[in-house]
Length: 138
Ligand code: HEM
Image (cartoon, rainbow, N blue to C red; front, side):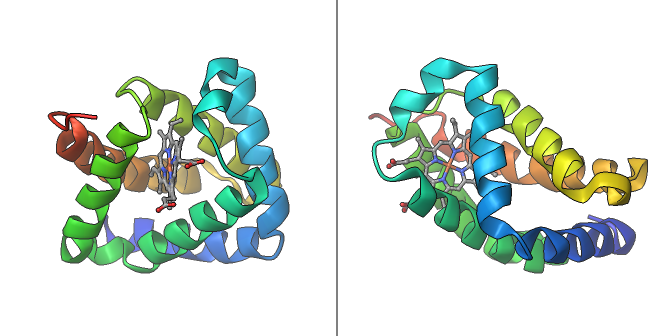
C-alpha cells in the first residue's frame, strides 16, 4: 500500500465507523444478494459477526501501511476461514459486496482513488488469507 492509498482507506474507514452497524448490515445484505447460499455458513448472530468484521477491518486499516507486520494474524484468519467452509471463489463475492457497501455508505467520497485503495488493501489481505488457507484440512 502506498502512503496515498493508506490515507484513503484510513480517512474513509473513519467515516464508515460513524455508522458501523449500518455499514455491516448493508455489507451482509449485499453479500447474500450476490450469493444466497453463503448465508448458511454464518452460524452465529449476524449483528455480532458484523462487529467482529468491523473490528478486524479497523485493525487492518490501521496497519495498512505495514501489513507485513501482521501477516501471521492475517494468515491465521485465512486458515480459520477454510475451516468455516469459505471457498477461494467466495473471496471475490466478498470483494464485490465490500465495494458496493463502500459506494453506498461513502456516497460522493467514494472516488475512483478511494475505490482503488480499498481494492488494493482487500487484494493484499485476501491473497494472504487464501494462500494460508489453501492446504488446510477441515
Ligand atoms: C478480508 C476478508 C475477511 C475478513 C477481514 C474477515 C473477518 C472475519 C472475522 C474477524 C471473523 C470472526 C472470527 C472469529 O470469530 O474468531 C470472521 C468469521 C467468518 N467469516 Fe470472515 N472475513 C473475511 C472474508 C470472508 C469471506 C470471503 C467469507 C465468505 C463468505 C467470510 C465468511 C465468514 C464466516 C462464515 C465466518 C464464521 C461465522 C460464524 O461462525 O458464524 N469471511 N470473518
